[in-house]
Length: 245
Length: 107
Image (cartoon, rainbow over all chains, first blue to last red; front, side):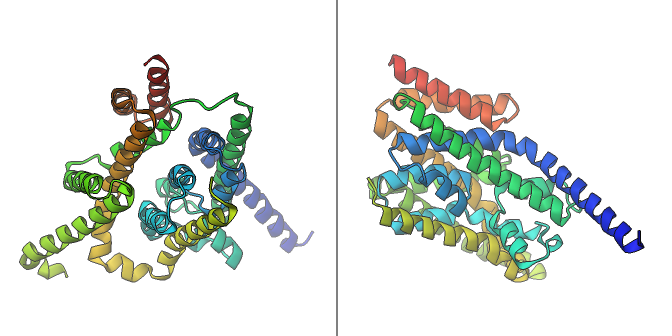
C-alpha cells in the first residue's frame, strides 16, 4: 500500500459519508415535498392533462408552487406571455438565493450547471440553515435527493390520479391553501403591510379592469406600484441616505 | 384541451426563465448585491406576489364551484391552523383542503 492509495481511500470514505450526510439533511424537507408532489400529479390527471406533463414540468420548471399554478393555466390554454410573466414574477425570488448558496464548493461544469438548475426553495433553505458546512458530494446528494422526492411524488400522484374513479371535487383548493400559508410565512413583520396593501389594490384593480386576465394585470400593477413606492422613498429619503449611497 | 405544440412551448418558456433566474445571478453577483433597487424589491415583492396568487387561486376556485362561503371558511381554517399549529405547511394545507372538500359535499 502506498500513501497515495491510503489518501485515496480516505477521500473515498469521506465522499461516502458526505453523501450520506447530504441524504440525511434532505429528509425533513422531503417529507413535505413528496406529498405535495403527489397532490401535483393527481391534479395533472384530474385536469385531463397527459400524464407526462407532471414529470416534464418537474424536470423543466422544477419549482413546486409554479408547477401547481401552471396546471390550471395549461388547461385554460393561457397565452405564453402571461405564463412567461407569471413564471418570471413567481420565481423572481430565486435571484437572491445566489447571494449565499455555496456554489463555490462545486467543481466541474456539469455539476455546477446542475447545482444552479436545482437551486430550489428547499435547496436554498437547507444550505442557509447550515452555512459553511457544505462540500460538493454533500450538496449534490441533497439536491439530487430533493429532485427524486419531487419527481417521484409527481409520478406517484399520476398513478393515484389514474386509479381514482373520478375527480375529487374541491381538491384544487390545495393550491389556494398553499399560497395562503406561503403568504403568512412571507409576512412575519409589520414591514410587509404596505406591500400587502398595494397587492390588494393591484388585485382589485385587475378584477375590475381585466376580469379575463386578473393574475397578469394584478402582478404588473403590483410591480408598477412598488416601483412608484421605491421612487417616492428615494425622493423623500435622499438627504438621509446620501451618506451611504 | 391544449395541443402538444402549445405544451412544449410552455415547457420551453418556463425552463428558460426559471433557469436564467437561478443561474444568471451567479454571473452578476456583485452588481446585484450593490443595487439598492434590486435589494429593496427583494424585500417587497415576495409577500405581495404570494398574496396575489392566493387571491387569484381563491377567485378561480369560487368561479369554478360557486361556493363563496365554503371557500372563505376553508381559507380561515387554513390560516388558523397554520398560525396555531406551528406553521406546518402540510398540516395547514391538508386540513384546509379537507374542510373545503367536506363543505362542497354537504352544501
